[in-house]
Structure formats: structure tokens, C-alpha cells
Length: 196
Image 1 (cartoon, helix red, strand yellow):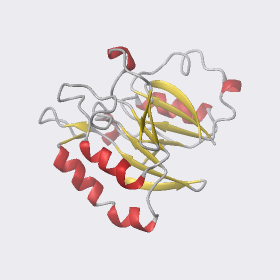
Image 2: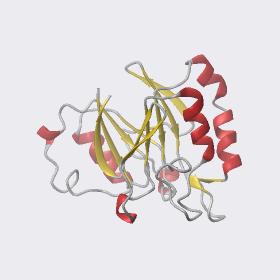
Image 3: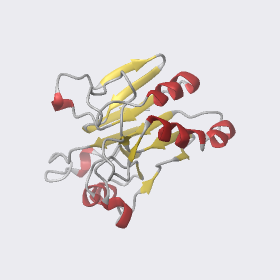
Image 4: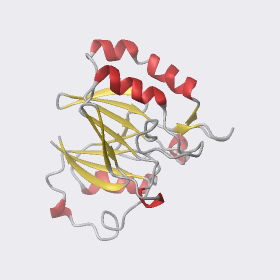
């Protein structure tokens, strides 16, 4: 299964200069947040594959006008072609106004609410978030620091992949791919294609 990951920045390669023949083998699109509603709707229209997304910390518009033809997996565990995908959007809380901002304790509570679903499905294969996990490609400021509870999820369930956004690769010399135990961590900044 070929998965197109997108996050944070609308790349002209996929929008202004889109070439359909380059993406006709894509089976699934996953957005890790902070992308425009129109961009996601465009991608799901042009690429004949379902699009799952989690919101980023700059996606307030998703509350009133979610991307058409796309499915939010925020706070959910979905199964697509036998692959179990867990979604948790948002970032660390850095101001009082953000709808998609959480303290470490609040994110732990969100994960706890999924406990029964995780047990029923015997874990998950892919973790999709906006924020990275603590110590794995995150930043040092409050807005960009990762969640420690994501590391707990990786340690407990050992998913094959962890896809995230939020930490722009042009912020500094950060690697796109990291490893946590048996889990491959991929920063979805702009776009990246993964073969599952």
C-alpha cells in the first residue's frame, strides 16, 4: 500500500503543478495537520484515494468548515485495508485560545479514552499526529515540544509507523526519518510517500 503524507506547507508540486500520472498508484492520503481546507479537498479530488487527517494547531477553520471528501481521524482508531490507524491531532498548549492545543495531562486523557478501542483492536499499526513525540524530532520551545505520552504509546504497542508534522524541516537540520525501537518515525512536512 502506497501512502502519500502531507503536512504544514502546501507544496506547489502537489497543487500548482499537479501531475495526475505521478500519483495514480497512491492508495491512501494522510494529512498530519496545518494545511488549508481547500488543499486537502483538492488532493482528495485529484488523487483517487481516501484522505484521513488530524488537525494541527493552526486549523481552527476545520471546526466550521472541514475539508470536503476527507475524514477526520482525530481521537479515533480506524481500520483501512486491514491497517489499524490511530489519530491524535493538535500540539502542546502554548496559549489559552487554541482549540487544538493540549497539556501533557490532557493528551494522556485523550489516549485513555481510546483504551477500550485499542484493546479491542489489539493495538495499532500507524500512529498519526500533528505534534512529534518528546525527544524525537521535536523543538525546544513550548509550542514545538513533543508529547511524552506518545513515547508511551510507541513503547506499549510498537506500531510499524508514526507519522507527524508540526516541526518544519526548514526550521533546522532535522532528519525526516527517525527510529524508536521497531517504529519508523516520519516527519510528513510538505509531502512524502511511504510504502506500507
